Image (cartoon, rainbow, N blue to C red; front, side, top):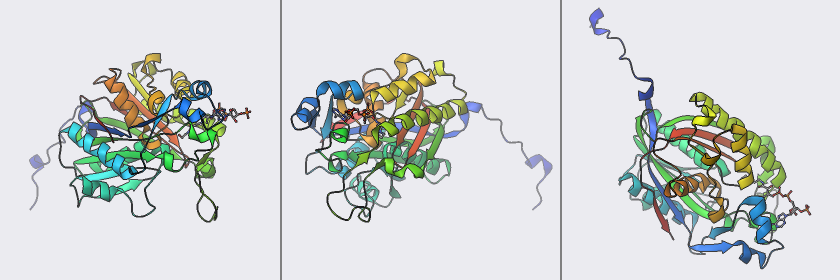
Length: 346
Ligand code: UT7
């Protein structure tokens, strides 16, 4: 059948703020109950509270009990995010972790099963401390491709299982924990809309943060290691340029940013990146003191603390940025949504 000219209706004009977008609809976190203070680490390591606080900003971190797994933390955070979103079902699950309970299979399907969501696509993303940004970008991609209307992203870590407790250069830094968000299909004009992403990697520096494989180190315990100083400098450079890209994509000038949430690895790194970006000084979120560096889980945990503390308000222009092993980095720009954070301790 031939179409009449009158049937070729022009595309309806859309407001620039009404394009389809993934929107954050729920936020959940889960932390292990056991707190490990700087003072208790100093009992068996050649370190002290003052060094740890002044060099990193960390005062304590959580450690999962022997019977609590990464999958337990990921499931609890995801269940809390669903509660926060007022949902019982989603179309897909993406899990970010560097510390899987076992090499195979991925933990995503088990978490989906535990949530009563057996059957949905579920998989893991491994991007170390950039894992939450990578997983959120992947989930937003599923939504924008029309493959899902809603996705839960859960990021969980048990670094206490891969860090050498006798190595003061890493043992004081990391903690266990999990954070999750629910994304749903919405529009760019809504609070919670994810407006821009930037992702990158540099595999030439794969050894800067690593756990050796069996072929690299056939014998002995294979612990996590990090070239701290090198990573410090690269993290500042890369998070600054990546965050700048998403701010430029959104045409946001520095002074209009309402919340700047960088990966919580070191308070000095967060300050340095915030200064370079020239975002208002009170917008840089630093919640590292209580939980340390929780790798992939650090951004959702920091968002939750900032929100609960009243520092992250609905509608705030929010910039997220992360850097980690791989090397990997990534940023996201969003407006902060109206929601209630649901937390638990296990
Ligand atoms: O999450 C993924 C991304 N990770 C990061 O972004 C972390 C980046 N790196 C850092 O945050 C910092 O480099 C660290 C916190 C890891 C280290 O801080 P730093 O100011 O770069 O210290 P450094 O490595 O240059 O070490 C300075 C000194 C050394 O002693 P000497 O050689 O100067 O005598 C270390 O042996 O501090 C010593 N040191 C410690 N002293 C007391 C290292 N760890 C400790 C410790 N307690 N726990």
